[in-house]
Image (cartoon, rainbow, N blue to C red):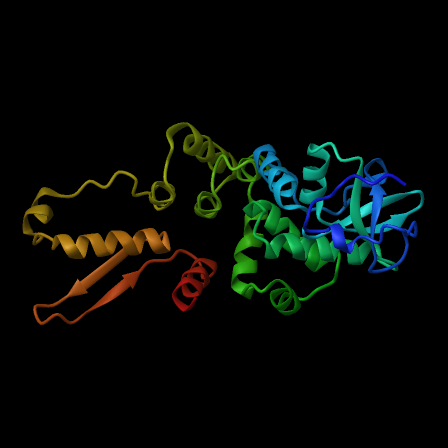
Length: 286
């Protein structure tokens, strides 16, 4: 049987004389045409340039990790490794190295695909939220089990799930990365789907920052300051102003620092909801 060279990283792992494709744990060559994507794959967008870059890496260094598969009737389904599979197809490979796992249920397929993608942080914020929801609903995990399985705090998971309350158009904008997850979380403070969609469009067209959106949500985009108040307010120390700006960028919320002449004081971080508070606490305690 003629075998195409697969690169230095995997050459010594492939049992060249074996035609058995069902041995659990053995690396075998499988016709690419008989391989289908994981139907439970949470990632809906694959960056073409990213796949091309991975293909170049495989071409230069070899494939260091085979594709994980399960047998399904007369074809194979990918359990994990779809990016690698796409990269190999990009290189025009007719056969791919894979490990065929036995006794993998649909639930196993779903959980493995979701957890792998979440842990690798290659999903958009909406895709990640959908993955969390599927693990909770379809795999029957509790929030505590999910937190342990994916290595994320419960508040992080809760905040991610809130994004699924946004209109479909806004979720689509997050999936294609027209707006960020930070923008999306700020939009949750806007009452009404039509207003959320309108503001999402402004984010794209006007390049609004997350902070801009938060100000609009608070009704303080325009901040008229009474002249008398401006005159009575002492000038802020430039270093302190820079510190406040850094903190606001860090937490994505309004921050105030109050300090007396002796140097004592306090830092105030504003939040809008319990979920917003938990997000800030996660950043502080990280």
